[in-house]
Length: 432
Image (cartoon, rainbow, N blue to C red; front, side, top):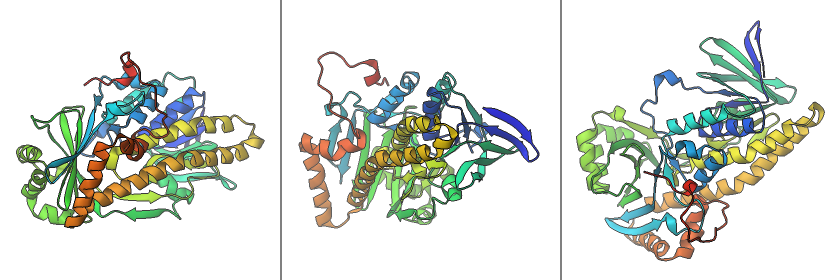
């Protein structure tokens, strides 16, 4: 990698510039440096400000665990992770689905809750050990793209010490649902946004004493529903669904109304909320929408994770699809970037097209499943709620139906592994 001073600020050059230091961007940087490439990674958030009140994705699916193991990261984080054994759905106080992840015939069977800061730190530590290099600029904000004819040739970034030009034959937008790279590259123009009927208020509460800490809980009551996810730090992460744009009405009722809404779904959590919530700053609002990007790439630039395919928080798919994007993109990009300069442009365009072709079907299946679940949760008419409970009970009693409906979300593209009598390997088991 080359670094120099220019009249307009400093300049760096690398094989790849990754914009965004979340799980997808960090995983891609690691995968690329393992293949010997040099990477510059730009992260907008200032680490000196700490994690703040934002609620970031912590749920890692079994397939996400598999991908972290492939990257050599899982052993670094498994002591921090919290294994989940079951998914339970209760509707009107009655359990209608009790899904046990151990019943699926795959090597990696259990989801894990993993603090994002621990995951990012482990990805960074592993990246530093690779044959390629990774230079991290943090905080750094992408404010423009460099161009060479019709192709993107890098990024112009704003940092506390001035403007930095990062020259690279491939720029990756891993900068989330409101991606600057997507906007600056023109890939934003045909994005199809689909607002969903609900938003989510996120908060953390003390874990109810009578609850099993290894269970994902979905609670439905009339026109309300919520997610209750055990965290590795011993708390419970609550995602309370509210009508679209309904935060103002909720806040007008005060924290007591928020606690009552939670208590209606889960009385134990409602009691915890009354005793622990002190201000609205203890919560975060997530605007729920999906975004379909017809083209994930243009010459010299490609999108990964939420920048390419924003999903809803149902079933916690965001982190896992970002990891899968990195897993597929890295070897394709590395092979193309290894070509001589004359052949590189065409090879890179072919590689980026192939990346989207391989990843898009899985993303499409996840989006379709999420939208079906969102519609199911929103049903309120008596006949419709009866139908919803009937569907969940059918899933509960039919292993074949569970595999058909839910396996694509938790085990995309996985083939069943033969059952073994010996204990599972350490990579298959996550300690509390």
